[in-house]
Image 1 (cartoon, rainbow, N blue to C red):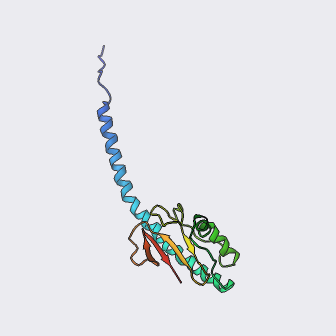
Image 2: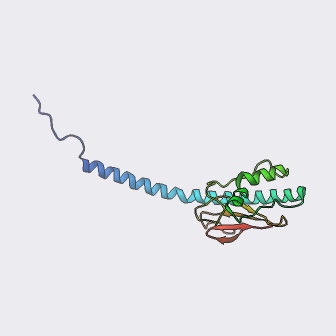
Image 3: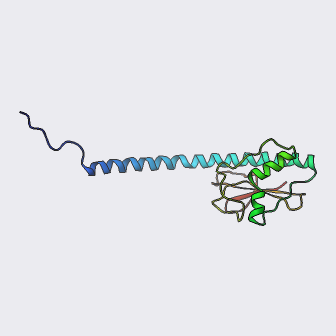
Length: 156
């Protein structure tokens, strides 16, 4: 009769070392892929801002003034971004849809570093400012001028 060895399998220490190595490899891989994704989102933001600028140009040609919207309060800021701006531009016949920030979170008040949203402001309807937030500093010549905290503004 053969004797069965009692020490078969892995010890808990060996399993923990393997799991730690796999975790380290995964962390490095995720770090390598996060920067290109942010760069891609920033490039899309630049393209989107040019599209919205063009739509606003069409809007003023058809209506005569830019949509009036101020970023003075949280209520106004909600009316100056996202679907609200799209509704205004669609009603004016300028576009069928407007782009949204790839992350589309946060709000337009205070230009927080954690907010990613396209914001619009026009006090008198004769000029406007489009605000957008870049995640990285890899865009060499951004369309807008730096407002602060990673936010840029485009004016006509």
